[in-house]
Image (cartoon, rainbow, N blue to C red):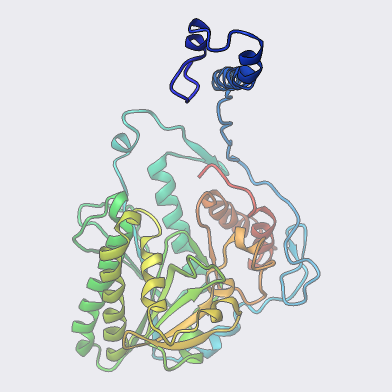
Length: 402
């Protein structure tokens, strides 16, 4: 055992450095240092041998209900069980949509080879309601429910799915178009490819605009794990001057969520939005490629916005929508609490669910809740969207098996 002074305790004894009473008293502190070091080493070895395996958190394969956040707040949804007690604003916005203002909901979707993703291991299926799903079938089921919600609340809108040309998506609906766009749709590059696909899509729409004979078609780019629970048309009527709209929250590192981006369908709106997204893409590829699989697009969005010296980030902590000029575009910032509400944030910073929520985003391990919510909505004629939102509000704290 080396004591850190160039000589071992054994050497000290062997050389009789500590022989005799007076030298022994002088060396007594070294003896205690030696004993302490030996005790620490023995404790470390003992602890290393007995470190327990980290407990694996088992995600739930059924809905788990708890209290509905926001109880007692007058501007939040109030529930008794899965029954809504307060009147919501659903359906009111449809009256404000101009006759010529068509809307298309656009999402990027890709499927993957399950055998490659699991290294040959078989995947357990999951059951929702009376249907069992493999991993690929789960993804398609989520896409179908995404379409179901849009056609329930915005039946006159169009749905466009941007995907890899090699993908064969078994989704056929009225007013739905599958548009292949070449690119890298691998898991590692999907968030980056999504921005590239948006840009290509806007380029084609700008080129085709002359054929529309003055007709304006607005676009809303979303994740495919969202439920549109009210008509989104009023955004373009209530805020007539924006080119591109983003959703914000009070989050210092990630104040913007990329799961909802609205683009005004005028020639100028399309071009300004395209240029803005090109700035985001440039920031992404130059600064955030280490986060290419997840969050890179949101970090790039925040960087482009916050890099403008006149931008006041304190506005992200407020609840009101606001506008600013960013990279030559008039950008409208909409609160996530209404246009990108998520179950965990509903139980946290959102303090429940606003009565005028438009979009529910089933981020992370809450895809089961998305399917269960749709099944609940369609289970009985007495259930409506407000009741379904009570179910989401009560069960959204839990992480589920997919």
